[in-house]
Length: 244
Image (cartoon, rainbow, N blue to C red; front, top):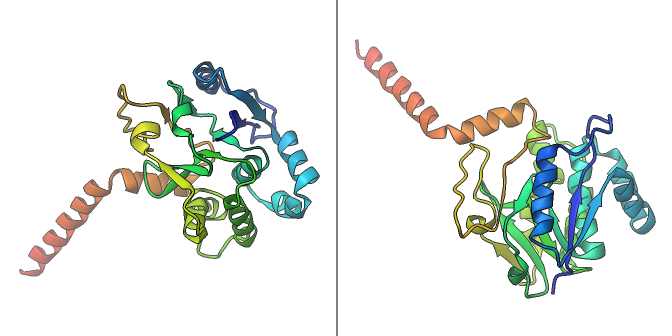
């Protein structure tokens, strides 16, 4: 019930027209080899912009005003899936087994994040599904950076996974299907990646858009137990010193 079209997006954020990294080419080839019965479509900046200009001109101003390229890459995904349907995957995703059997129903298929909520790195949909209209509207509402948002949280909440996760709460129908991270996304930013024979896909988290705040957030996330222990030790020592 999901159109058999695989969508991926690539353009060089630096503006130097650098080719797709070899590692990503390898991942994409593995994906296509395991899904030879699917059409494959690689989108670049020009084709993404043309989609908006031609069919969704009311979003063009928002699209052009995004400060960071990753926002444009994030923002175009709902339009691609609404317009054509199919499966979207990030370039650092690889699928080692065919996943046809998971898409037997109409609707939207979203993937559990290996961290919190939902990831937007892997999404599938029927054509013209109304869920994406909610996402489009929320992208317009959240395009301006709030004073309290760091770069990381601005991306996540304006066009990224946090926005998708929040939109699920606003959608009232029951045709959103959540896929298990244990089958499709067991790898996290900490380098923990439990590959096994039951696995269909995985991503290595290239972090192509990360800045210092993302690195700090990821470090805290990956080392929170050690950090909590250090804080506890400092508190205990401080209290012991205070006894004398």
